[in-house]
Image (cartoon, rainbow, N blue to C red; front, side):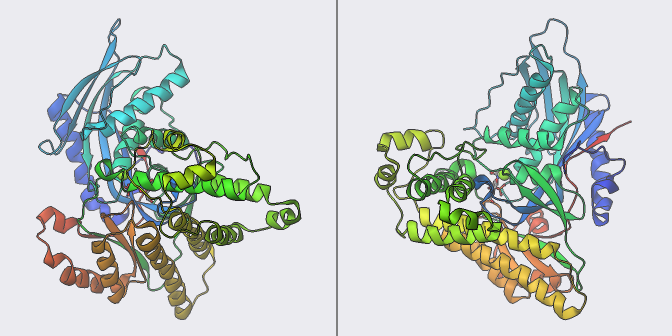
Length: 521
Ligand code: NG1
Ligand code: MG
């Protein structure tokens, strides 16, 4: 399902009907503000949405498939481009935001060789633009040769994805930025896969060693469908229709208003998990695969992954087992890996550096330089058992969820209810696994999920990186009000929320479209 980023003819190509009433005026306002600030009209708008992850949490960087969907909230950028002057050694970028008090305008010169400094230690909103810009310039240079000259750009941004809310405002901005730079520089057919890969690598430049779910969801999604995204052997996205059920299902997104800042807490949260699952992969490889087996170099943040272990494990399954191993389904393979992980990684209390280094036949400094120099983390013990079990069981849940969605639904209310309950149960299991094994939930989101389930949600779970952020609830349309009022009564009413927060607290989201371009004429 690759191909070029679509050029939308109207906003109805992008947004579900209900959103058009507010999106039309918003797009017009973006163009008006552009003209006011820069004194002329923009020539095109680039757009990429935020996403909510339905299932498949913290497994994208282990290269297992995930199932997110794009939401209506997005980043839109109006752009005008002019060629750089003959003989100039830099090009100029002027970037403003419609919310100029919160996101101040900025102007900077970029050397034509694209060498642009990004200071990931400072939190500046334009860093996300810069990372998309730098990635796009690299790709343009690769395509058009070193003589490629980027043009000057004027940009006006409007983002509606709440920052730090778990809906991936970052991927929305990075993907939109990269798309805008590609198009402004004459690349009028921007390949979705190329754009996604570029956005994944670019976002790592801002300091988080993430997987590729957010960028894939942002770029590839199609209106009305969720997305099944695979990363191995290569990036691939397939749309999944949510089957028509009665009563109709929807996803309610609830904010906890606990803000998780990955850039600050990375060494003890997100980035630590990346290191832990990489340790689990090499540890399992050292114990279970034939001596000397190296894990294949792959697209995981550290160049190896649990998926890489998975593949080599079944490849090396000994001769007598091999034919049996070959005929296993993906689900059976994961079941087997869950069993061998339980037998192999027995230490509930975690593993020290010394213990891991010993099994890998490395010194502790060698271990640190291989795994912890690129991704600094702070921990004395690494919970390899729990983290690997989360990844394998979650990968299995994604496959089960996907299979259910693909299964033709028999008509009849009882079947529908059973189906909804089954989907919900899988989501609840994910929440439990995140809470207990991956330890990336937080008490507030655990509460929210309990309240929603009591009020009739089929399945409730924290979504996104966690340690705060938001949760997603599978609810039938006729239960939405019950769930909302329970959350209002038992959670939100106890907080002091601004008007803006009140508006964002609970949103029912229909799957929106992914990245798109829109020509202004
Ligand atoms: P969010 O929710 O955007 O912080 C992060 C990662 C994803 C994925 C999820 C957990 C980024 C940009 N994205 O998402 O790749 O690993 O956590 O499933 O950091
Ligand atoms: Mg993000």
